[in-house]
Image 1 (spheres, rainbow, N blue to C red):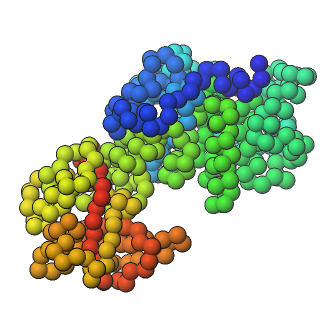
Image 2 (image 1 turned 180 degrees about the vertical axis):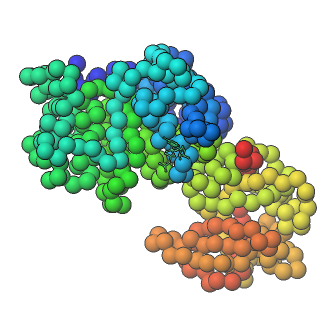
Image 3 (image 1 turned 60 degrees about the horizontal axis):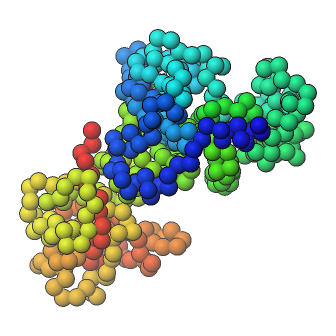
Length: 402
Ligand SMILES: Nc1ncnc2c1ncn2[C@@H]1O[C@H](COP(=O)(O)OP(=O)(O)OP(=O)(O)O)[C@@H](O)[C@H]1O
């Protein structure tokens, strides 16, 4: 069996993102989605205390075989602690972790790292400078007593998987940062781990190299269907690479969902602000965890414009759902009220705060009558303080922050 088929052996194809999203609301249902009790990585109530501080607080998630999950969150939210706990470098204070039904940790009997069948790739490559690329990759095999043809074959396959076969005899210092990171990946893969853990593997690379390496990781995952757990604080990286993203804050799992679901249906204002561009408004007469558009949204905006409705719901409005019309071209009556900024017709009045050139379009920041900030896109520059009519085409109603 070659390395590629070994990595694939426990994987099964995931349902397309749309199919998974269509039956699952954001949040807990997503968390249950991959659970089959035995297959994959099963994390239940994982809690880790350092003194009085809970670096992990009751985190539960299932990662399916072959799935690519990103752990995403701001600095100090517990991502690295989660990864180190999976690797066996930290022991849980409470909770339990199993891999394909095999016990890894329940707070009292942690399996040592070397018996977990996991590989880890670090931010700082950790390659030996005095060894060739091939020797770096093969080191773990030598430790296992593997020699001769078997050794050569497995090192060759691992290097081929990361497209570095022709670099086998080079030293790490003669490689680019991206190539070094691929050597680190090959070194981790050569032992055919059941799960690959990656701790901010692109953090040391410049912007262009990161983009190229994202392509390498995506391609690598497509070919191997290896199970990957990938720590990052870069939401763009997580969105472009992962099948699902676990968003963490203060040691807790806030939302686990596909990138599309996180963008379209963030659970709370905090998640909405952390993922993608957009604005959060307080609107009356709406229900949390629902999408709102058309007359329902217009009615709410009219009530908002007239200051009606004491019970409000936070909604996220993405900039691509905000349609702008310069105020002198808005049909009479469409923006009603004594001042254009008050608005209560099918469009809401607003003032332009800034219009920033972003290449393919302008990013426009608006101020509504009550001071709410709203973000939109425009194909043309809009002068600061000019009046515009705003039509919001779609919004997502949020639950309160926990
Ligand atoms: N060995 C330790 N001893 C004490 N506190 C720790 C230890 N390791 C982590 N912590 C604390 O636990 C919390 C979570 O840390 P962790 O490194 O997991 O966060 P992170 O999300 O990976 O952050 P970053 O993105 O900055 O690396 C932090 O408040 C950190 O200070």
